[in-house]
Figure: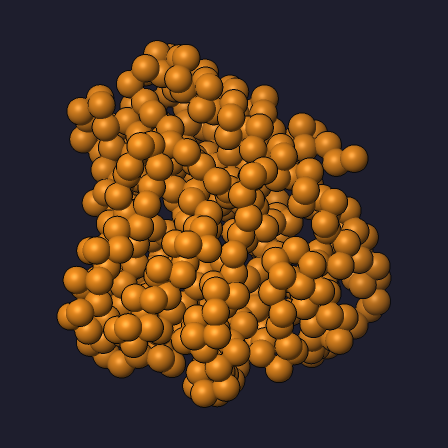
Length: 398
């Protein structure tokens, strides 16, 4: 029904992934210093985490229809906004949510910042599992909290939580744990057994949890997303969950996310901060949010199958054509974690070679020291584009 192989020219649409590619590749924090790499227009962007697919057509139609009205005043979430999200989670995630447990917010990183501000004090320890989505580091450090990391461990080609390491560090007084579920960048979808064991630790050491579940709809066949708050009553009471349609429906530019907080005391503390900063979502973001969750089920099901096939394609191509690289078992998301450590290159050398071949991925070292020798690539693109990018890598690593 949906044609994910259909291509679009995304240039001149003011999207970072394509229109700021030259500038992004030239950033010092991408470890690129060669002047010749600045201003290139022939790079394939495998970095920025939005997809190259057409969004749900019902979203486009709804926004077009709303745009026909000649006024764009202050707005608020409609009843349909709440109903569509609540029903989506009840049906797909067996997650019961009430309207009064929701707070509308522009984005998940913004939400993370507010959660840290509301639930911790300067100097408090905040833990993440590395390698992990790098804005978490900045949000923690910019608010003068103490960053604590616990490395995921790689066992039999699959990343696992190191519960023993986490417990030792919890004993030293961690106040908040940021759970990335599903995990970015390694693509793990945590099981009920893992989440239960995690919550047991958080309960024992009185650790609050912020669960970033922005990729929760992007799950491969054979796996199931478990919302952290569904683990048990204790998990629901000690956590704040963030969800959004932005990754799932390729509408990141519309800035529409939501927090779920079942504990009234935590809700009050977070809502006080959100209200104080006067943040909100614009009318197009609110409309897209409602339409996505009301009409997007078939789209998501087909998208997940396509992404799964893309992941299989990459894994097979790497195994057959890039002998120095490795991929790992992935359960979901459109982000893949590629291991080039066997080459023995510095991260700067690795990035220079890859960009020199005409590919612009994310530098793995951004996600923690565990990412040295790794690249993160975005497979949320047409398979022909994916193949072209891999063939470029083959010219230098094959």
